[in-house]
Image (cartoon, rainbow, N blue to C red; front, side):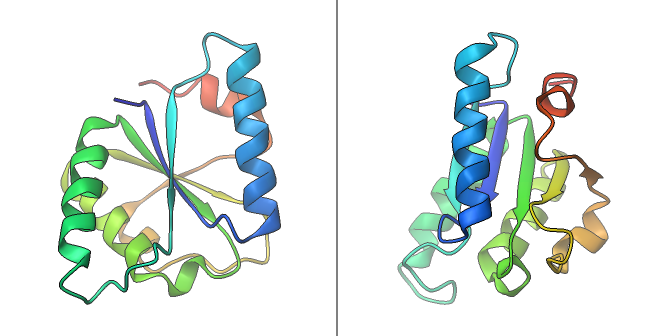
Length: 132
């Protein structure tokens, strides 16, 4: 079980650099929350039969995590998977966090109803001080 379920797009260079930075912070600070990264666009289309198994696994992991952190990249707003992850976390009464790696990125619609806590993605204190 991890403290944070992190939804991100590995193809986005800024999101990838954020992933690497998080790993460095976690290696240096024992108070840093545990986390698991999950691709916002898995290789399986959202509306297929095979997606059911992926959704079951993700639902389980979201329910086990304390919070969901959505890294808003250039293409995040188009991801059905991300909107589903946000809705699943919200329904499970998980706190939703959001961070834009570029201020011009468009937020996914799911964040409008989830009332997320926006954090600075490049400030480790913002994550350490979150209550898990």
